[in-house]
Amino acid sequence: MESKDKNEEKSVFVYADNAATAPVMPQAVEAMLPYLYDAWGNPSSLHAKGRIAKAAIRDARERISAIIGCEPDELYFTSGATESANIAIRGAAHAMREAYGRRCIITTTIEHPAVYETCRRLEGEGYCVDYVGCNTSGIVSARDIEAALSAAHGGAALVAIVLANNEIGTIQPVGEVAAAAKEAGALSFTDATQAVGVIPIDVKKLGVDTMCFSGHKFGAPKGVGALYIRRGVPFARIIGGGGQENGIRPGTENVAGIVAMARALEVSVDLMRDVERVRAMRDRLIKGLTAAIPGVRLNGDPDMRLPGNVNVSIDGVSGESVAILLDMKGIYVSTGSACATGIRDPSRVLLSLGLSREEADSSIRISLSYTNTDADVDYILEQLPPIVMRLRKLRTGNYDEQ
Ligand SMILES: *Cc1c(COP(=O)(O)O)cnc(C)c1O
Image 1 (tube, rainbow, N blue to C red):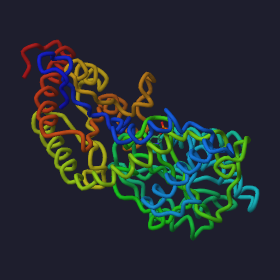
Image 2: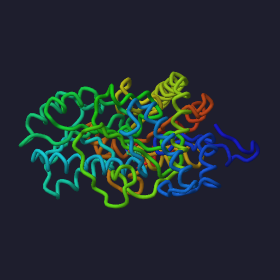
Image 3: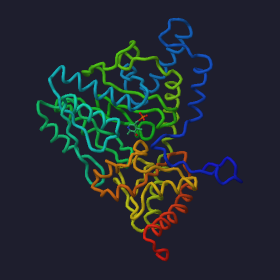
Image 4: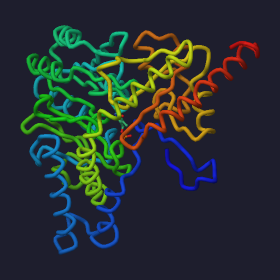
């Protein structure tokens, strides 16, 4: 719980929306400031100001690639995971079509829109896309991916699967999926945006050909991300421009953002020592809510899930109303995914688990991180049950109930 002024109630808040964006780390800001105040040169310039900026990018690339377990020349800086995913999927799909005439993409029904919408667009551009579903706890089976690979007409070009889902936090069998793709001669891509900086990720051990992530999900400012492309894989350059990032992502680099992302990732890796504490808060919250409120169900797998993710459906209320009332108490959470806020459609991910429309609409996502404390969990457990009871009474008109 953060409090700037103990006397002012409004200044007390619990930030429990870390899956939407993580608080910007002071260390990241500290690291980027010299590249805003002084070393603001264009890394492509040959003079001293340019060389300093270029060296900063090289240094950041080395530090980040060492952490995720790849070579520096396999890491490309982008504006974030959305751009990385678009480049990764299109770059692989175009290259595989060009080289082998393969036009099939296999993905899942629980992808983030960055992946899902890109695949939808490719359907209109002559590709076939197979959307593989998940089980009721939100896990996609590697066997189902294998079956889709065998069924792909003319051979699959690419398998795209999220590593950890952003709404329900389920962790997918990406290693098995990557191996199956390789076996079938297809490329693999994983969206690791919820995982990098939160749980240890070694891209070589995962065995995927491409992987994306975004700096702001682990403490860097928004607008910087990265794409890993394994050396030697067929890959088409899809953005035209100057030759920056080896032509994969042309455009003048976000030097300060890149420097901040490297620092944020290092600090995040250090903070992973705290993961058991985060997991314990998550489990106490799940237990506490289930015990205090009848008709609360956890969405997603209880074990194969991100350490900070709590996603529950609450019978008889709208998740949106709950989130608004929590906001008034200074508790910041999401309904479904933040990217879908404002759109009235129920969560595609929750419907994929087999939830009814009503159950999907009644869900909230509370995403914790190392920044949260036991006092935050206590405060949520104190505030949430009466909010639900109030909303239920309003709905039934039965003010005497419960
Ligand atoms: C946040 C997120 C993205 C998109 O990241 P941006 O920084 O908004 O581009 C993609 N995939 C997942 C799983 C995410 O959580």
